[in-house]
Image 1 (cartoon, rainbow, N blue to C red):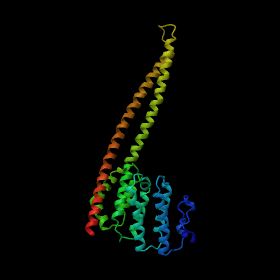
Image 2 (image 1 turned 120 degrees about the vertical axis):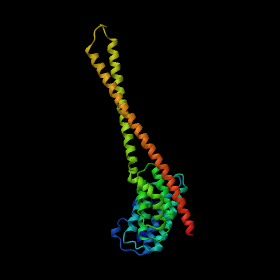
Image 3 (image 1 turned 60 degrees about the vertical axis):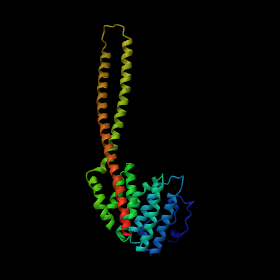
Image 4 (image 1 turned 90 degrees about the vertical axis):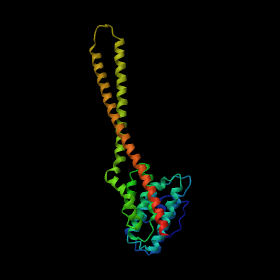
Length: 303
């Protein structure tokens, strides 16, 4: 365990395997005192913040997700023995880290790990209900909205973490006044819109490729027919080969019409889906803003 407390050189350790504080197996850990657990989590957060805070760099989102998953698993286990004051320090630190993402233009690392952030908040809320989760919930709603607008299906995971958090006065209010509308849409299948939309785009792309290949066949067949016609020695004679070519050309052109009609239908369907996604996204943003206003008002009223 002494390696876990070794000073971390953030400038040189970029490989996860080189990080001395990592918990490779929660099961193999002994039960730790709170301060020891908090020290481990702090080192995780220090490294996480160092990666997220680097300017002009492109953090490895998968690496960040791995770290956050390890933190969540450690907190969820019985080995951490974290008490209320430890939870408060941890929640304050992680909330401060993710609040910085709102101010950044390049926030893709924050958005890409929003599900993991929500997972940790959800996990802690079940063990410690005395914390004011107003700001963390506001951050989760912000990143959920961003994920939806980026057409990432993981927006739903963030939403599910929010609604499954242990109820506080604030969360009960949000679920009753704002989040129920989103839940109703989810039950009606809005979570499938991205998958259906992507599927239609794939079909459109495949149909376009078929039309392209068919056009090449039409061009080659037309050229061959024109070549034969230019080489005719007896103008009044109908050659069997040309009859076959004309029939083939007619079939190709008919097939092309069918493919174009099918593609037009798919384009119209994808446009309708895109419109539905856009409308839901606008409503989701509106709900998020109303929710954050409600959160701010409630926080002020309680102060």
